[in-house]
Image 1 (tube, rainbow, N blue to C red):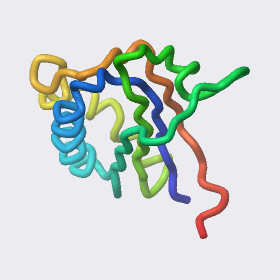
Image 2 (image 1 turned 120 degrees about the vertical axis):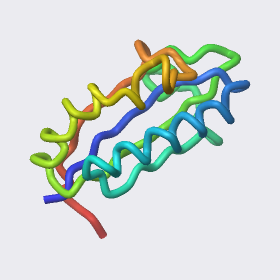
Image 3 (image 1 turned 90 degrees about the vertical axis):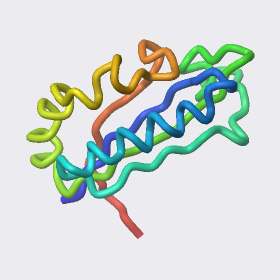
Length: 117
């Protein structure tokens, strides 16, 4: 069963191009370890909420933009096998591919797909 890792965070708006480069570089590595697809989305219509919202969840600052992304895996087993290898891969280390955003405010999780139409 296909598996998804999902992410929401906020990046400085001025870092848009750095964010895209970071994601493209990382996507190549993730695919080498079995990911089917990596999708990155840059916020275009992400309103503030009164009770909860993407901006509130990631503590978005005035000079930041919310991003939303996911990695599609063939299965949770493939993802679980790949993850330790990905974390150890030199190409994904902060000195080689620094995150152009505050990773401490990023929300992430793994999800079993239940509808795919």
